[in-house]
Image: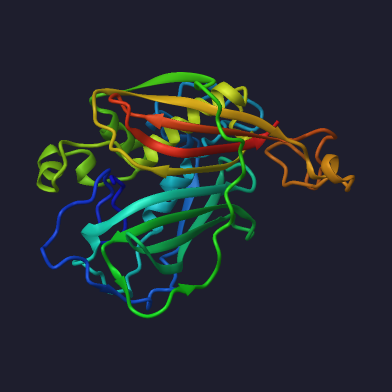
Length: 342
């Protein structure tokens, strides 16, 4: 089944596993459990925030109006750009034999409060799980993004499978993954469908604006040598473009309301094609206080709000179940979920 090769040292990030030697991926050690990646600090200035929105062709004026109170809104997908340069582990020996068999299985991004321009965000990852499953060895990397004062802004769970590999010894689980939000099963046809063009230069545009470079996304010669049909769109670009559609359709274009993005990556997205985002279900979950008679929860304020300001009575969570399909109907994103404040 197609997946995405993990973007870590010695690995490609593609829509399909790249062939390797006939010896297979071999046996994987759990020595990397608990090891940190490098800590990378990035200033989200106005230029960078605007560039990321441009990377995914999102024309929402909120991402470009620096005259608005509080400045420009930061697209939540910028978390993927923050993760990319922090993925290295210089003190961990690379495994070139296993690397080509690694596929990106799923992503789970939790946003505790919106990213803001003018703040420096430090991102650092840690491998928290390795365990044997049917297709191979499943691993989980957790990236935490914090402000200069230590406030946790976002957490990104980056999950993959090294297909055909065998784990040396028992499963190593340092911490559990958070459960995904529950959404009612879809009934019948999609609630709505929106097509998104992927231009001939979309991967180059995303590469330069998001600052995520891998030559399989920009140079046909490298992509073909890796066994791909041509250059393909970054998996994070497909996720961010899909998120843009859901934000504009279901959250009035207000990205500051988004709290969660989950999804499984599957088929490749090629250049000069069209993808379609389809909403399969949409529901509103009452706040904890409304459900159980408890005091209303508090949340971190977005830009312009007062610290500790309580949730407004009746504020609830909207959940949207979606999928993104390629031009030939293959699922590029499956079991996609976006959550946000109503």
